[in-house]
Length: 180
Image (tube, rainbow, N blue to C red; front, side, top):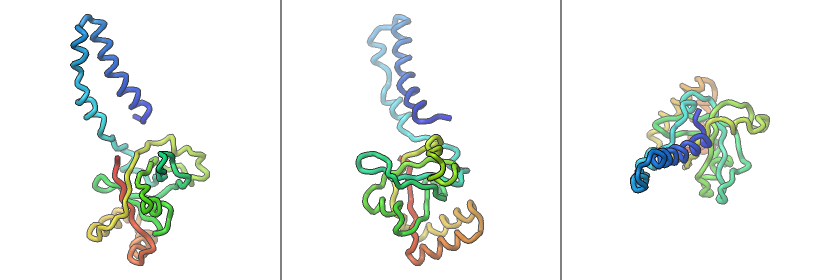
């Protein structure tokens, strides 16, 4: 599994090894300057979406504060991943929604089921992670598709119906996250 540490090591080691190999085999120093940095930056700038995002039932989410630190507000949440975006429903006054309203739109998620976050002893932080940018979702035309995705993923029990009712009553909002 490729994580951030392995990616960083690989992205710095591979270009360095190419330069060292060229110098060891007698190529001119000018040849080392021809390494196409733009190509390597373009290849590494796209974030790889972990396959677990397609199958996991839970994510652990935390807003990122203005100083770049993780908020102490963390929690496991249901979500759906649809059209390259991640959707979460939450109470209108929940910390997730309040963070976005306070312009704390950046968030970090960890993917997988590690139980209730307060008892998970931060084991979820060992799982795949992504950085996201959040917003309050407001596309009424797409809302039925998102609610149907929740029903398909979590079953036809009480919650999909409650989500719909509470969104209509403005007790609940949908948060939309895009991978950064």
